[in-house]
View (tube, rainbow, N blue to C red):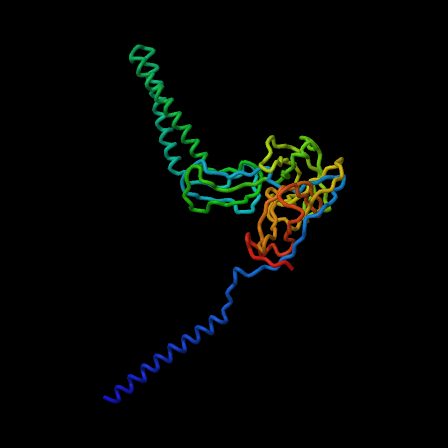
Length: 349
C-alpha cells in the first residue's frame, strides 16, 4: 500500500514538473518572438510647400492610356477545344484566339440541308402539277414557305458556327487571359483583354484657368519619365467638354508608339511653348502618391500621417504646382512614404 502511494506521489510530481517546464519554454519562446507594434511611430522627413518659378514653357504631368482596349467575349457557347494565345502575346486583327466545340451545330446544319434538298424537289413537282392544274396552288405555297423557314434556320446555324471561332478585333497585346483548354463558356463570357499601344493617349488634367491655352490639333512635346531626354511629338485630340469636381479639364494627347517602348500606365510630361513664366506654391514631384489623375500626398498633422488629395497645376521635371488642397504651412512627407498608411503614427526626422 505504501509502495503504491509513493508511486502515485512520484507520478504527480513528474506531471507537475512537466507542466512547469512547458510553461517556462512557452515564456522563453514568446520572449524571442517579434511582434510588430502597429502603434509605433514611423520615421519620416517632411518639407513645406514653397514658391517655385515655372518657365515660359508650361508642362503637365499625365499618364499614358492605351489607344484601344477591349474585353473580347464569346459569341458562342460550349467547350473550348483550342486556345492559341497566352498573356503577353501580340495578335493581329482577324487571327483566331480560340475555338469552341461546334460538332453538334454542324450535324444540325447537315440535317437542315437534307430537308432543304427534299423541299426544293417537292417545290419542282408541285410547280409542274400546279401549272397543269393537277394540284392546288396552296400546296406549292406551303412548300415555298417551308423552304424559307429552313433557309432562316440554316442562316442561324451558320451564324452560331461562326461564333464558335473567337477572333481578334484588332492588332494588340493580350493583357488578360480569361479561359483555358477545356473551359465551358457561354455567350458573352469574357475570353481575353486586348490592348493596342501602337498609339498612346497621354491624359493630363488641366486647371480651368489654363484650359484656354489648349486647342484640338495643337502640337505638344511629350517626354516619358523612363526616357526624359527623348522628346516625341504629340497632337491634342480631345478636350473634355466637362470639368471634374476639382475644376480640372481632361485633355488627351495622341503619341505614336511604333516601337512599343512606352507602356500604358506610365508617367509622361506634356510641354508646350509660348506660355508665360509664373511663380506658384509647389511641392517636389517625389512626394506624390498614386497617379496624376488623383494626386495625393501624406501630410503630418498632430503626429499622424494623413493621406490628402490636392488639385495640381503646372509641372516641370522636379516640381508640381499646388492649385488647392495644400497650404504653405503644411508638412508634406518627402521620405518614408513607403512605410505609411493613412493615420499612421509618425515621427519627423
